[in-house]
Image (tube, rainbow over all chains, first blue to last red):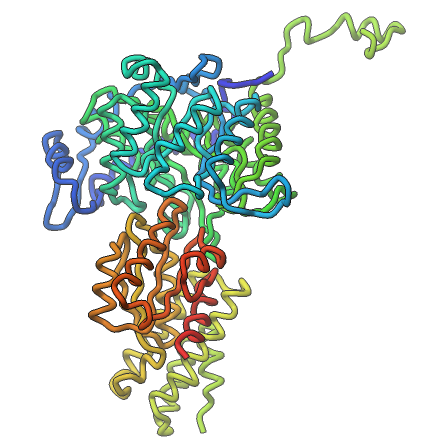
Length: 413
Length: 211
């Protein structure tokens, strides 16, 4: 049986006081340091000024006064529902309810016949969707790989088509541009019957990596993020600083910066459409300081991803983050323990929408069919922990103890 | 006769005051600035590169040594160096390709190349193919370095190389590619001259291609 949507929150690395102090620190960063921005965001800057943000065009910097900022942030819904196509795997993202699934944009797959890493194809994406559709513990399908066998300009429509065709679970992906977003909308509307049906029960959603850490607005992704908001498609506001290179080496510093980036992104979305369905997408990561690789399997990543949920919960916005990453290149012992550790911590932390949790290897470069199956088990067991230990009379089993102590046995009873 | 090995080894060990003393001593003994640079400091950076490759030294320490070396060059040697002494291996134009804003790895490679004696023209992030071609025309480098971190922006490396070919400049330059998702197979596919998995081997590769 699948334990999806259970309440986590058993593991809280930050005390209430620490949550308050990190939140206050993030507000102060937004007031004093603010965001820099890339060219091409003139309209967005004007809108931000109308909502009380201070834009210094000479220095290309936006400052966020805390009252106006939090007023906007408070408009974001505390619950976001990401629907499945068949209604069997709807995701009610709120509080400490936990769902885990796939993620990434891998370009290699361990070939089923040879075991060698080779380029991923559109057929692989479809096959993985079919596999995930059958794996009960994987709660959603965020496209885990890129179709390297078709031209880049055709990625968006083909990715969404392959995903929607292969599974009825919720589908999420990034889009390359405006055009890709609208092609996705066309396909999803067709599947839904019409656009209104799609907006009423969005079974697709998008990711927008709107921030370049540290504290910089990316024009391209910000525009995609706001386009999704305008069209009432839920959007995950991804930002993924690596402690040591794009955020401070300390966990606290990385959490403050990530939280500040998220507060800004959420506020901007709410300017376009108050009540817009957004996911707090802070993914605190860590650099391997021997080579600057992404050390997603470190225990600190597990700890920080639990802590970031506490910060998202503090402002009452459901969160999107990661677990199950590893730099192991094949499904080996290292992959096993790094995944089990970070996925268990994410689940116990109460993160709402945990992607990357199945299938990933080799710092997000590679996926493997067998890894999805192994990770389905890891997710299932991590969620089982959340179910806790029932202690009602039946589970106390006093009669069974009594009978056995009087000569019956446990195996037959 | 000055002890260049001492300079190199002390630099690699991060003994900053000792390096300054030894460089000053060598200058006092009448050694040329170029020789101190080539046989002392750059050899030292070479040792650091090897340590980095073997994961015996962490990246922040590498950066610290490189920054220190550039201080020593600027403060103690530069006035004594001739045009060309600093960059025996020539010029490299570097860019993170269009659509990609990640530059930490690229910057690390640039720093190592500068430490090894290349002149680097860094065009930054999200650089359109046209800008790269223009810079090649203007600066006449002997090498081009292209980087991408995202699996979704990797194809832009090929687009950029194709643009260089179309502009008729391909034969003048060697092209190096890198970035987390890039590998030798990809480098071969897109028609690059070389690929390196990390900053230290990128330096070795660049040197071998320069010769």
